[in-house]
Length: 168
Image (cartoon, rainbow, N blue to C red; front, top):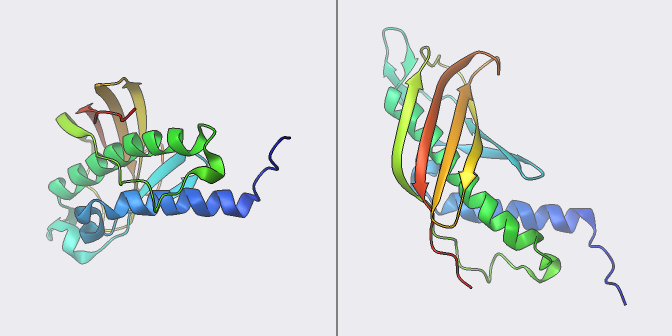
């Protein structure tokens, strides 16, 4: 007999709890105040403006290191979310319990190149990562960061990551 589909709210709560657990595994995310907006399997990183993020008060502009960290964190969370998503959606469904699952090991950065296209203004910033290739050992990711207008990027980056060994 086929199992009844779970209520949509239960599925959303499980996905949100998994994402929150993943984010809490990176203390620097909390320090910078980075949040993630989840729509299905798509994530958007959000860096809310805070005075502590300003690197050049004369402009004022968001510090380049903060920009790079925001883009790199977005890439790592996107890769890790992809691995978690596979576990949640691979037929385990209701049997997948984030509390019981160990927090996944995060990908390790091999290299990360940032293109600073313009100054990051003193306002909220957003980023979205696109995984170009993700294999068992290696992944390549492109990240775009913007503020008021998605088509007017203030930074973009490309990174290569060593993927954690998968159990099983």
